[in-house]
Length: 274
Image 1: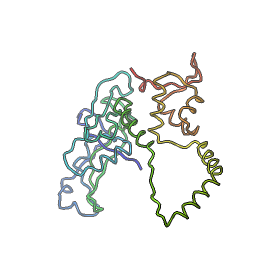
Image 2: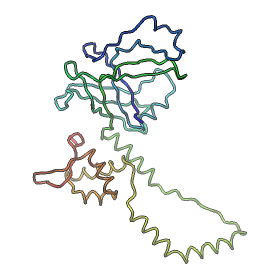
Image 3: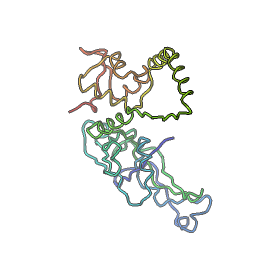
Image 4: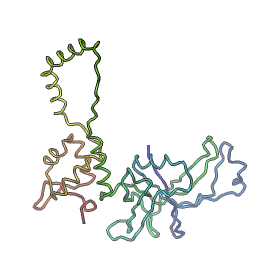
């Protein structure tokens, strides 16, 4: 399921491919609960459709108060992007205690003042009763959000790693009545120690998938030491399944196909430390 949030675009100079005419006779609030009712007050409003990570969507969805600031959207001109602008999101402190604080928007469909006309996509909401549908705006720009790898991101990832690697041991108190049974269990475990050790070794030899964020963290730490790695070296560092590692690696790194480092992987420019 596609999870998204929309941002208002108040620039009146931006062009939309479709103009929806509204009928004042259909705008009365007395029709809001009727089946087939369509409110079109905001049909011409230009909005951004932004796909956010599930963990961020879940955090925002848990908010019940009104008038809460989710964060700050910063927009500045840039000659390094196709859209000509660089957009970042800084979460409000209340949301960044256990989540990355800074995010970058990557446009998948951008419509500048004088350029590509957006597709006819609209944002709808309803009153929760299966009726009273309202058009909230026409999609003018589409983008995806991904965390920026900075000190905030590393701190969160390190905290998660520490929490995940803590061994939770349980102490069981045996009563005198259970002494005989406990002795039998101990004897059995001793006799089958070799078989259990062999099974444990077999399980460890299988490469188990770590969470994507954890694999990314391991890769970024590796790239702090060296700029280039061959794939075999990254397999040894991460201990991940080949196809899974290659999928994650393609998100943050590129394969050098020429030059002195041919055949090795290096971080994409946006992920390198400046």
